[in-house]
Amino acid sequence: MRLTKTLIAAALATTVAGSAIAGGFAAEVVEPPVVIVEPEAPTSSWGIILPIAVLVGLVALASNN
Image 1 (cartoon, rainbow, N blue to C red):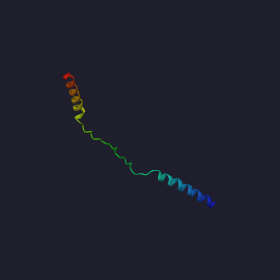
Image 2: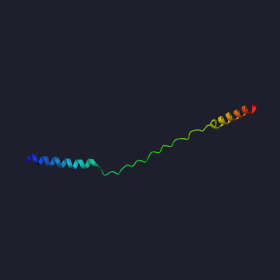
Image 3: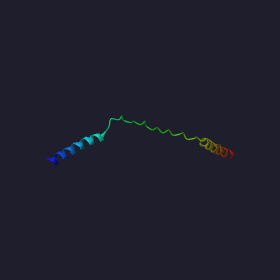
Image 4: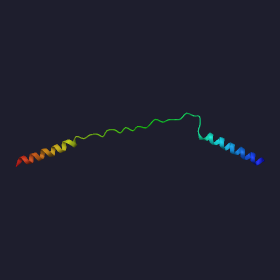
């Protein structure tokens, strides 16, 4: 009889402790989302100047004949 009371008390303590660990009364902490802004890549004027210079060179070669 004494062992039965001990087992019932242990089962009750386990049940109460399990629900106490499962959550709390504290407010939920919601972290704001992280936004990463990538800087714009610097532009180069060589991307348009070089093809134009090659085109002018080809036109100059073609007009020499």
